Image (cartoon, helix red, strand yellow):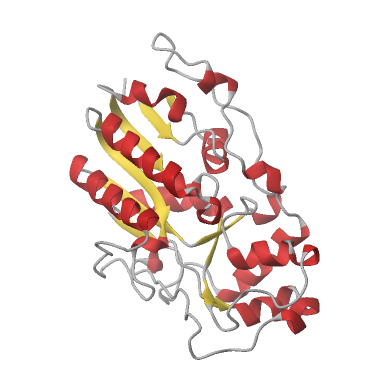
Length: 297
């Protein structure tokens, strides 16, 4: 029998997977030591930066989590590993063929880079799936969406560069898109959407807040315009994006009309993972709905 496992099962993204797919083993920090000396046919590894969102990440905790995972995975054998991570590992105008970032002055990003390199050296068959700002997991995953949601609680100019480009990904697509990447024999995939500027987002989905946007400055960041060389597996004609701008705007409108509760972002220890022991490593799937139905593909 070939075992399957998921690392990060109790976060929102993990719940999305375990609701739709069965895993023999559900792993979270409380039982990571059980990774030692295990063999898996397939292992899904959710980068801890995606558990509560890049905006909400605690730097010291994140770095410690990666150090622990590196230690426990050292004695683990995996035939196929799917690594879900962020666009931050690539330059802002990159695709899959572009040289990845090798270091960073940002301690979080630098730790993420080192962990990526470790994963690809440690395991033979790795599919790296990189995600932009995520739609459908609540707050903590997109600065512009969080700002719109919380705008009524603040006053004055909103802290968003006017012409900065943003790329988004409706998380309800993730399982089907990862399946497509494996079926096509890919080693990496940027799930890139057509970029949308801050101004375009507010113009389309929050026009009542436009007068609170700052003026554009030459020093403003340009933002993300990552592309995918393999977008033709998802979208025809090949544009470098798997989702067009109109679809993203429509999805943002739906997300803002039916937001995921902010408190739902907190990574929880489920009863099954909290009580797991060395004599009970197979954990039943939890029936927990975490993604708004409005983002279904």
